Amino acid sequence: MSPKAVIDLGTNTCNLLIAKPDGRGDFITLLDNKFPVKMGRGGIHKKMLLPDAVERGIMAFENHAKSIKNFGVEEVRIVATSAIRGATNRELFIAEIKNRFGWEIEVIDGKREAELIFIGATRMLPSVDGKYLIVDIGGGSNEFILAEHNKPIWKKSFNMGVARTLEHFHVADPPSTDDICQIEAWYDTMLTELFEICRFHCPKVIVGCSGAFDTFMDIWEKREPDATIRTPSYFPMVVLSDIQEKLIGCDAAARSRIPGMDRNRVEMVVIAAIFTRYIIQRLEIEQVIHTHFALKEGLMSEWLSIK
Image 1: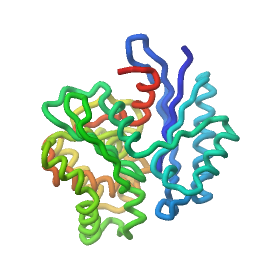
Image 2: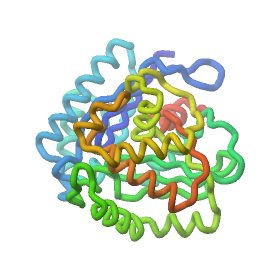
Image 3: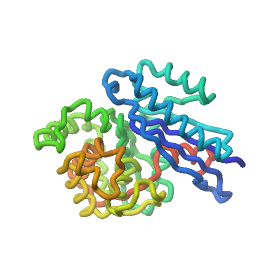
């Protein structure tokens, strides 16, 4: 069977996964790549894709098309999330991709996004005692999935990703105490449904997916971003807390010099640090598991009927 490709067009990043079945009920990753797009920059609150965002998106697809051709891929599936689904002019971009590459883009809603994230995040997840909360921090939206024994109990997508947060608030660099208080007060009002479900089920473990969590792990291990595809592993709480405080306390120039920092995340990782610190403290989380796997791995697993 020839390799297949999945493209996850997010608000900040266009992610590519090329894989093939391994014959044992799993798939072999041949290429895991990403390209910065920032599709929501300047337009996410206007529900518009601005011309420069469209251009970045097309460049990402051109970049991925070369890899897809090099690997001899015949079938490609593309899903688009928050920035695309919220844009009133999205059909123009979708038509342009169809015209240039012959590819269809499937725009998925938040529920479907959370479903695919769950499938991907639970691949090879270590045994977890009790209930746990999967957290995926995106540019346009953040997804939460409450689960137990690799079965979902509740899932929800919230339109409060890091790009939306930065456009909603005028945040100093580094953020001031007032900035952080305003952002956390906003979280208080936006996440009432999450707090209610967690008050009842009391998860003490977070499974952090890709994106910002990958950056936190890169900083801890001081390795180049995306140097390896990691299997799920425990993230020491003390270490994660130290990384969060470091990112929140320094400006963009200092963050860019931190070993392991993904330069494409320098601007937004500070919001991710504020958000994860807030969630961990608010829900009294005791353990964090990091996984590289998320939406694109979930779609590939589903496509190949891998359980």
